[in-house]
Length: 251
Image (tube, rainbow, N blue to C red; front, side, top):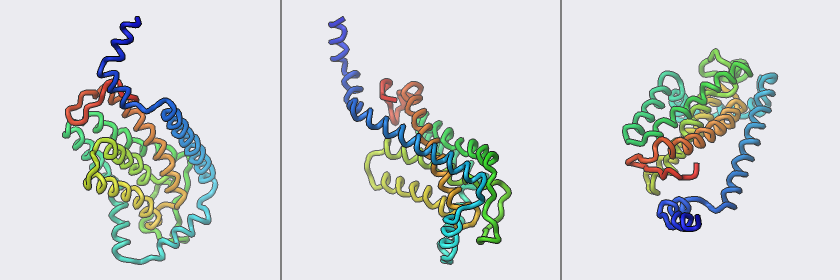
């Protein structure tokens, strides 16, 4: 037994795996931080959803929307329109399938499958919309670019791009070497996620609290996606030619 243990210790694959894994104390701290955020974000989302079910909007919602809409710059208005446009059907489907297909074409396997799962968070958000059933902003209070029939909480545009775009940020951050391209890609994706929430408020189709609910819910779904991705990649896609993953990598 002792001899076998020594042989295992000398195995270069074991040494490589151990070198890639953080110390126990670091892992415990990270796990605690992860669990704490999940508890806080889930509690905040549930609380906000319950209140949104009974309150059509908060004073801060009206204040923020009117402040944003007070700015009438043409370029800003067009930018807000095009950012929102990307999140509507059918264009959002083409974006998701196109990116996932590009990742598959790059022989990244699981890296192309996970974005599809990330995007599915919007389906669950549709159920939340039905349960909460909060009315969208009224044209009697603010300017509404186009009145939409569905309920407002949470905003599907923001949730979709928080999960989908957030996972692309995770991939770019973890897979790409530091470069101007990597920095530009991370910046562009981060701006898109942030501007999506701003555009939904500016166009009068969601309240600020609808947007915040989507960011909270989206971050939780993104965390689940990353956990499942890291678990599945080491088991089903350990030998990708472009981004190989050791079979014993920490999940």
